[in-house]
Image (tube, rainbow, N blue to C red; front, side, top):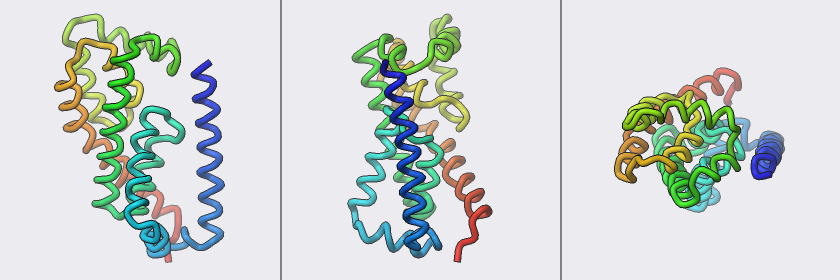
Length: 193
């Protein structure tokens, strides 16, 4: 039942984001980067706090693709601040996902994720000590199912310290690739004034 609710929330979140994006486009906010920055600055520090919370929550409840959040962060706040806000929010969400699965255990995985996905990554945990190495490698690259891996890690014997170290050191590279790569692609697709 939970998987179905998450899928529905994801569809609603994507539709709401598209709708809000169209609204911002029609009102002129998305016609240039300067218009977008002025709009975001109008909310003061609340815009940064809202964005940090959004990035953290989207790791635990994936309402939107994480890459989209990274793109929004860089476009709305600039390359450096956007990267920092993306990083802090995603790290906070990753730690929260780990904490939830550490508390609730494997039943939480089956409520949120598909059995084939769980079985695929369970094979990595067959040998003791292997999971932490694979986690470190996968978190470093932007193509892995990071959200799931954070939940999965909480059900293993990996320590809080090891998990936090892997997330803190491994996330910057993948977030930078998502943030800057998607921004470059986006700016090539859209002509900014």
